[in-house]
Length: 468
Image (spheres, rainbow, N blue to C red):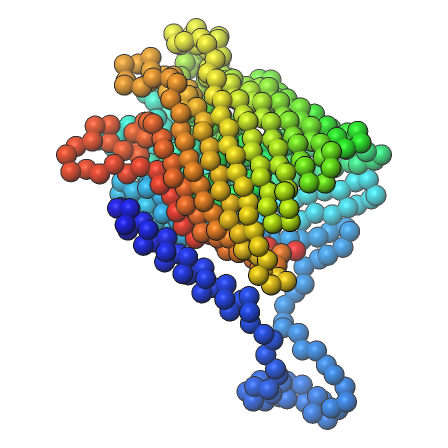
């Protein structure tokens, strides 16, 4: 698609958002003087005409969700119409998809004991085995050894972090997103079950909408897993220690592990995480996280580079400062240590050095209230992250024209309008530079004359809806 066409699409999106905002922001309550409405009200409530001195409220039919300390039900929805050039090779670059539809049930059974049960039937973040295609390279093509794995036609779309259709970056256990109980007493908290790891900022917490516009660091850190965590408050500091299965992040480093269920634990040891959050004053939020663990296992019976034991370590430093009610700035520094472990590398005959993947992103959120219930704003982020991972390391040692040391870069823009606490509409634009687009099946290995490079540009319209 040409730049002129892209600009036209963006202006059409802006016009759509403006037309949507205008009636919602400035509409006034209508008087109850519609004749048809009066006839309907009189027919359904004849006593109203007989007793004009008594005011009655007519409620729309429906069932109010439970709302008590013992049980509360909330609903969350995210969907969008997205253009993603990375999946354009068969004409699928524009898709309207639901990112998530979350039903959250939570409550407090006693003063100390509470629970959370969260279900999301939309689960598209895991890769699928690709069937392959002439002139294209797909790292998720099933290997010739190991358990027999059938390829999936949609494996060409669900490859890795660079080529996928999911709008939601969070991994799940089937439809279960989170399910845990928590015990709190005297500044001490214990949590057991499946929960989101406290690793950096959540993508929506700092203004990202989907996996298409969130920085790669935010997507890597979006991990839910089964385990136990202990938290303790020390004045303005909250410290957390967690032990968990650790396999929830294995697909991000191409540990396809025979395409078994991603929630199954193939790891022989638990992973650990230490994190701390400090708010020295109300407008400043500082966080630090340290993660140590592995994914996969060393399977000597079925040796396979794509199913091996990998390092999965991370150090993430996060900061957010609210300059004024309308301006906040934020950023994160991250350093990941990936790659196959020394024992697996020696067995397979590959480089035994771990892979270091440093990076950062910075961003700003500027907003302005239009009415008491409507706020408009923009969020901008810039990211630079090492492209090094197990796939790049493998290809650099296998005769491909790939080397370690390159970086991916992105600049993302988001325009949004918040309508109270329930509805957010947004427009996204993410300019991504990927030095090795062809190793994820995005482009042909050798571009033929007349074939346009697809790139990684993404834009679209997003809606988030919440019922609380």
